[in-house]
Image (cartoon, helix red, strand yellow):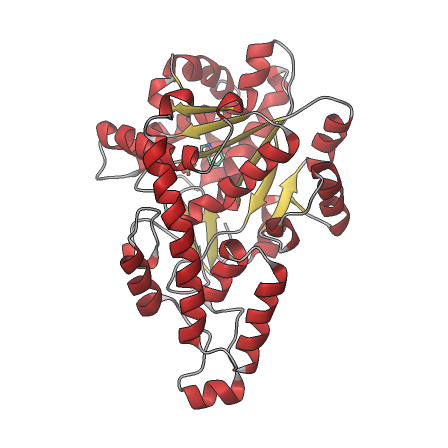
Length: 376
Ligand code: TRP
């Protein structure tokens, strides 16, 4: 947390204008250097735009993980989502990258849906709501095309027996002061949160528990989740496990401006994966913060600022993987040749094409959920 800098990033609160460079030093993670990027690309056999563009910008222990991989000690992937609402497009950023890692490294994936966590954190949701939402969100995971033979989806309350046993062992090694400092808890925080981090830790040892030997784990996640895994990493060696490695992404900004993190609680700031084409059109046209000039005349003369323009940023982070096309859009916007309205139409078209396909796959996923879910 960095009150002096006017931003704050914890798993339970992202506020202010997030300075990702500062976060690296505050959290004590490592930047993804050009050299590391090339190493990943070489092993993957191709490059990924989210790496090239610094969308995934920081990590923990990646060189170690790749060393192990090169020695034939394959890693598995772990990521997750707190089901508090329909999935929004910002959630898909790490999932799309995780899918790429699964494909390129042949890695197994454990995907955790934390209905327990969201019950604790969302005032208005009861356990049936978050459980239902976990099933709803699982459709989006399946729709992205993860390999069913290599992917397990855990809904916490449906896998509680296994999770609880391992979480207890982890919880016994974490003290209250550590959790309080890592998450910014106060005297009025409900006590469920204090234990919860040990539940979120479990998938990072689950393969090792099952196999009876240490298996390296890589966690792709949004940078706000780092406090959980920082605590996890401190504890696991004491229990005889590897520390999980991580690769961490920036947030997709809300429509209202490039600061902060998209949140489901403000529907006009967010695009849900279930939004209709007309809703997408309306939200982008009306709410997407523009880096353009107030009048067409001025825009033609002075050009726009893609760095603060939400439509441009969404193209950069997620919707325009082609570097040449993205650069052309950037240059045309900077020169004033491309107007804000036109830029927004490019984005609307991209999102609606993506969502049309996603929604179709999401429908089909309803019959395939059982290929992915595990229970105990
Ligand atoms: N706590 C996360 C959330 O609120 C959900 C989650 C559980 C997660 N395990 C994870 C996210 C691992 C990323 C990686 O969304």
